[in-house]
Image (cartoon, rainbow, N blue to C red; front, side, top):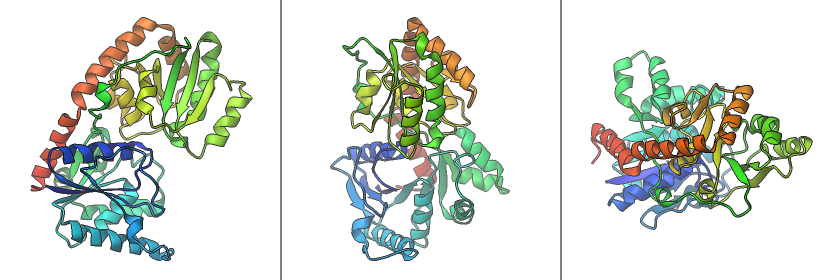
Length: 371
């Protein structure tokens, strides 16, 4: 099978990590995989990509002299030429803007297009323009995929032709990399305990709320520190907030890391404070590594991954007081952390292994008559 997988870039991010995992898994079983990054400034490749995968940066195929508004037209044209050249059996695209581009570029080629949303479209704050484009263009896709049933169900309700929409809508959760499953928990020599979060420093993640909440419990747990791995537009604001709270030696923003699994494996607990999610890879991977986790019960993602009190702590969305209580409970109880970590790892590894997720993709491909 020939698969073209289209993403915005291969820099750090959950969707990019999934693109790397899927492209490698498909190539390993013998599929011909072309991974296309459409970012106009090209960017780098943060995640390792198998040498069996053909990596294409669309910017290399476009003239640097093309300016807005013609740049978007040129991008569609370049992507269409690549589709014609690759002659794929199926096109898979990730993220809203890339989905729109791929669907338009593939128009008339008679190649199935699977457009994948990686966030909650009802909560991610997309502009009216993008909402309109989705309304106009998404019906042209062969299938629309969401990361969880809760998001898919909401999408189905918006469409009058329920039977047709049910056939076109798929739920395709993220997989956990086989490589990650080989990692073992580690301990640090400094004797300090570490609560971590991993994600873009962006309002979606509500790291300001997390830092304020940690400040409320920090004095009760003077051997614990908060590390937030990632980069983004809120760095300056978060840095200033940490200074205001005099937590410079307890709350750290170390930036991106290529060794994120090592950092997760060495963590004592994980926290997800997001306002919305699709299927949070950082939470999934931490749980798979056996790291006890606490998360806001935003409408999609955490509730699919964990069961409150059994393999994680799931708390009311945006509730800082509840988050503080959950952190107190988790940080104070080593036995609870061990129990949640073991049960979480078992649950995630059983449900979200690469073979399990590839089987779901294959069911969709079969339904679309892709071979």
